[in-house]
Image (cartoon, rainbow, N blue to C red; front, top):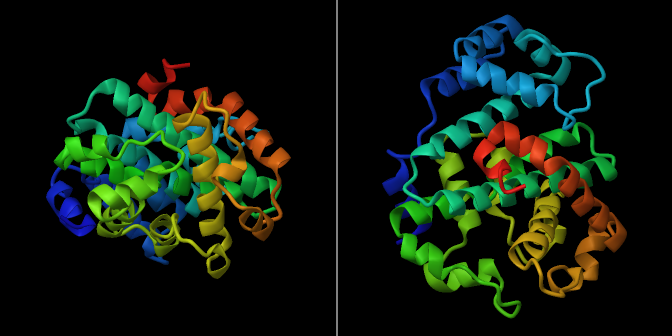
Length: 283
């Protein structure tokens, strides 16, 4: 089975709601106003509550109180609110997955960590509106859940804590593709923007110099997350996952990566408590 085959089989299980489709249509329509978008978000109380919680969280660090959806759109911008909407509906789409809760909680912890690493590193590098990068980290590994739903035994076969066979290499051996490429196919089917699915598709490329900063950051953030979560407890160095040349592309060093991990440890619980409360119980 190819990544496309997996996504085709899972497409009737993992779907985005009609509310999301309507919001996407409004955002794509240049004639739409902030009020138009706000009204559709307000029709879903759970979505509205999540957007406001995220907008007022330390993740954005906005100095004032954002107490209405229209203010959230105005202050954060349409693109940022759209990313929050995507985050909400993505976690909702996978609530019906046939999987053990402990496994799911660990999955979302790793996804949130990658999201936080993206945001921190982007901010450190002076990337404008670095918060938008978090959606790449949050969605980067959804393909794992797709594979788990269709062939759980193959997903388990892809687990690797062997430094000589890293997870993405094991996925290629077992499946013939990576979870990242499967994630990208799902996001394309959901008609998410190219700026989201392209870096996710390319997260395991060999020559980073040919790709944009978003792809380079995701490559690095994912490997920092894998070191701290998947290989937790093993005495490994960043050099086991990243080359000096790859870090130099973005002017990153070991101290910046350590600071990013510290940031994750501080902010993980707050973001998990909003996006996936059950996973926050791990902390």
